[in-house]
Length: 102
Image 1: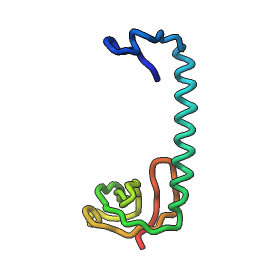
Image 2: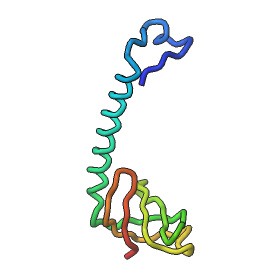
Image 3: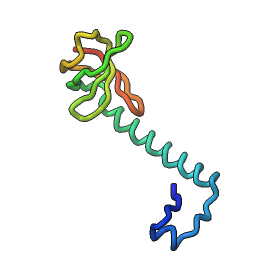
């Protein structure tokens, strides 16, 4: 979204003539497109096994990042923290992959 910033060239040259509602509408379009694109890409990981460095544990679930910088959740224990686990991806969502240790 464009917002005027005092002292910038855009502030001097362009009038902010787009309504707040239109800005929100455009933002939603872009946000939805991004989420659809990320989900499609993440779905390509389903069935693959990734190396995941576990860095968080809560309620029987570990979370960590793969070498591909994907956030991955999997069932685990506190002992998994700081260790690399091989996780087979079973489910893809926009911002996280889920799987099981193999």
